[in-house]
Length: 329
Image 1 (cartoon, one colour):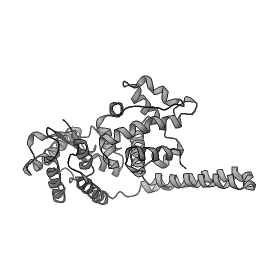
Image 2 (tube, helix red, strand yellow; image 1 turned 60 degrees about the vertical axis):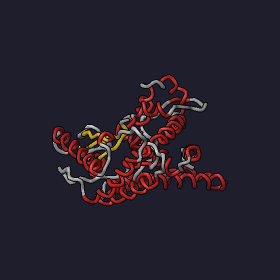
Image 3 (tube, rainbow, N blue to C red; image 1 turned 90 degrees about the vertical axis):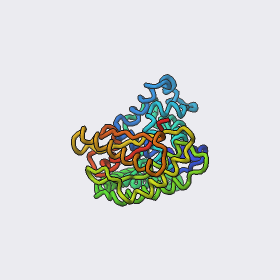
Image 4 (cartoon, rainbow, N blue to C red; image 1 turned 120 degrees about the horizontal axis):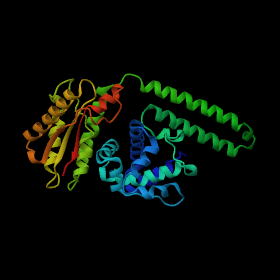
């Protein structure tokens, strides 16, 4: 069993979202921490800078650690919580509540002797996204199986040090293979296709009385893949935006959504700012033409100021070029 499997299962049961979505939420959080730098130490520092600062020390003890969903949003930022929720296919409210349950318990499990590691420990890398995660997950299961064999086979106990070395070698090979796979060509078209499927399914799953956060979580699963230097909405996105317009009309009264335009860092900052605003305006104008009240949606361009990932890879730049919905009111 993995270091966090019990916590993940408990969270899935507690919040009714299933272990796979909890794992995705946790892995997305770990990826975010790696991208931002600081690792788990940086995460704890975020909480220490908020009103929950004094209670963070209790996470290092043996009691039941706690933090509220509001404190999670204050520490991570509302936009970050929304993004993590969208990646996990759950509402922002559920994501905040699940993270409030998960984060203190993760810190409690890794802070042996009261010391919080700055990097994600090796035994937690299997919970991260991407090929490396899959490789590490296999290594984690192999180690676990080997331990069970040793416990049951007395004569094998003398060979456990050798088995441990072999297992570590396997982990190294798997991680190396994972890095090689992650550096292979990134298929943007496939990612757009998969995102469209997830977004359409999430919109269809919305039930009467859904919240603005539920709506935003579904909308942010879509990827509107503008052509380079263009603010022309691709024709293949019209169908999704038609569904978006219909859903916005059903949002709670008084809801105001922001349509945020974002770019990667290719080109100069002023040009990126202008392009991001034009793209956000294009989406807003389209939705208004579909009957959405203009006062219910605002458009704002952020240029390359709010990256989700590193701009050093094709995948990172792809993730940074986005239209992102958020609840303004």
